Image 1 (cartoon, rainbow, N blue to C red):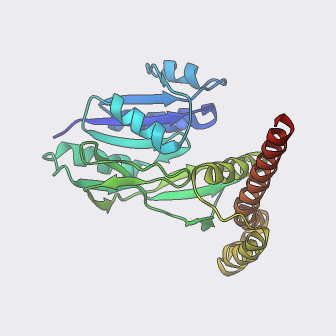
Image 2 (cartoon, one colour):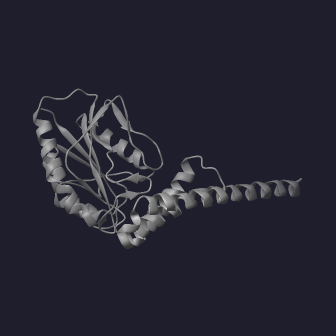
Image 3 (cartoon, rainbow, N blue to C red):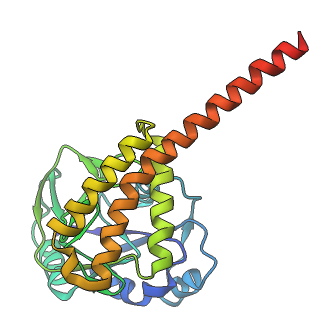
Length: 266
């Protein structure tokens, strides 16, 4: 038998928090909530459940998760986001797992995460298929989240197996949120990762993404939600190259202005 710390990231998470917290409380011996600046009812809801959140300004998802892991009292951690809801089968498996002898530290488990967009389950959301199976339950002495700006994951000396059940990933819950995340993810990608600055490459990539993620994936069968996921993939593929190009142009203009100013001073 072993003890488990649940690490939960929040930021303006009141929309789902009363669905997210109850199953986590069932499996947790300790809950660490790390908030990055909520100004809705998130903190008040945590207090309702007897949880006092910790605070750290947001930089990247992996940084937040690793900080929450550091705050844990137990070596075994279950790392969750505030738009992921465990079902009964997943909860039952974790409870049975905890009741057994403590596993080898290099053992880890993946959740079965089913993505929802605008309230509907989808088959794909760029750049993943649904369900996907991220590692979320592991021993913190063996693994940590990497520092990728988007789509980070757990890395370390671990061997993982899938937990039965379905975890509902209720993301992109409104059209505003779709475009908000589209802008946030592509800006973060350009800021922290090398992207080739090319409009032409962006156009070609966008056309390819439309065919792959809307037509060939079968998203067109899902009506308006399929259109949204198809356009999300298309715009994402274009914007990451366009923003890199725009950033390069700004840098060139800034460098040119600095040279001109230096000549005037001389």
